[in-house]
Length: 457
Image (cartoon, rainbow, N blue to C red; front, side):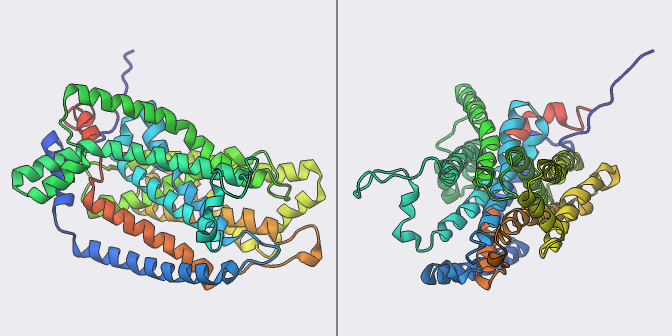
């Protein structure tokens, strides 16, 4: 009996050549912005403007403008911080880990995912800074610098300081990795601008490409550096959200003091990050007409990762309840009962519905390969992941050991406004990236044309 394996689906459709790749992706950089782009950019600027106003008022008057109280000292701000850091995980995972595993399907989506990582980490960094109050009076105290006030140093035993090191390192490596991948594509746009006689664009992209010439030795060094950066980035993907989880796990607050947090947070970060990548790529795919490069097969593979990480998150939720019961600590048991049936029950069950139930729909191939269903479910997943962080933080704090100190947290306009600010910045930055930078890695896509195109099949 003869056994034969079926061919994998094409990663690049439409019978593209290397010239087609350059033309299809570069034209979005060379053409003028469309009316739809201007409308989206205008909405982003409106959100950003409202957020800047609320942030300015908070910086001027202090964080008493927020809905915090003596019991709930962390709430909206830290929820958004952890949420945005999680969003930034998929970009580096797609770029670094999948590169090391030689996964070719990453090549059409890694550029946008890396850009999303950069912008998400910047959004996350705004919340700890604003939480300092009048940050210009002392933001530098978070840095381990010698000072004129004696031997006064930061507390190296604090996970909050570990965050400073982990996230700044993660941001730096991700930024270098992202920009290095752009250099060959900037050179392509430069060369096209020279042929079209556009001297200004040619000069700008020549500077951005550092005069890239594309010789054999240059490509060899480029690929070596890419592998080195991928090796550096891979442990960062796991360590950054592990350290963020230690902000909670190293405390003694019921509901936080648990060893499951590091893997649980990492899985949740990849879960939410891939959902945001899907949200952005489905819009980019439609608006820029990149259906031949971002195919249904790419969408299906990312949905499979969402199934896996969503299932891990669901197991973590069940494990938390089991350990609370098994440990027989009354305060811990009450914390979890309060999450499910206390005043914030609506947040808990929203989290469970969005994060545990909705991703299981992707087991159905028709839904997994549906662009409309994927777009809707990707948004639902990120809503659920925001609720997860809110539930972990607020429900663990609002009812402590002393019933006399119990209180509720209600966000004010200024809490919400600073969240809106990050959305305004994120989408404005992504729109600028999609307009002025090649949104797909042309060099890598060209390298798989022969092995992954319809013509080959």
